Image 1 (cartoon, rainbow, N blue to C red):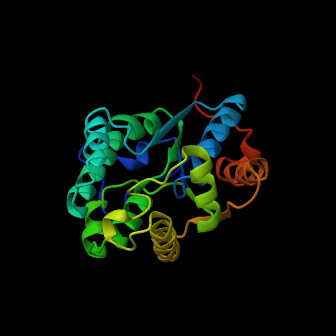
Image 2: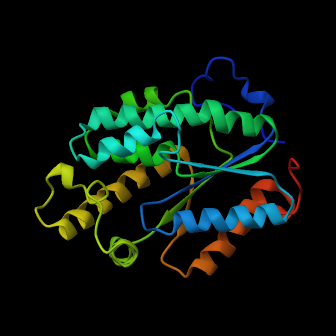
Image 3: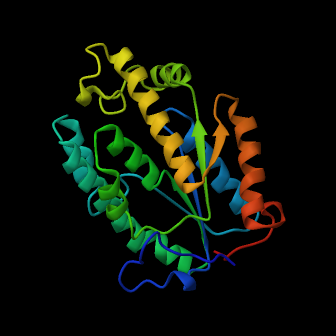
Length: 238
């Protein structure tokens, strides 16, 4: 049984000790293959008999659509974007993550607060302010960071979308007039911030430059150890 806690204090009305499920987070930049790995993990866990809920960024029905629309204008200030994403996160925490954990589900998070913190830190946010902002977040049972080289990220992004994303290229930071150069610089800075976060929060780094199947087998072994019995012990039934 998982023993949950929050980084500082729980949200109102939430007793982390009564949350019997398991919270597993997969972090990684866009085009790292992260979402594919989460989808494969979900299917595998369900085959093992686990009840699984998947969450991720911009999936709150309260704020997700507004956030997506606001980003299209490419005019959000760093602080406004931080607060948009924090609202999205806490709405999902209250209405999806906590209820699922209370029911004994495995919650797979396709990114969590660490991506949000890394992005904000690159944009000059005060670390103490960020820690306060996310102080009520639940501490995951495990966090796996899919680390991919900037070169591979460029190749995968262009293959999947035929263009680079404005925000994931750091174009709002004025790093370079060239989108490709800006993307590489920005992703290197994000990677450096994740290295600092890894030291502080102790999550596991997973090599992401390999084939998808090899990464999946690696992740299944790690997730299995978190759940016990190689992932074969059943959780809550659907």
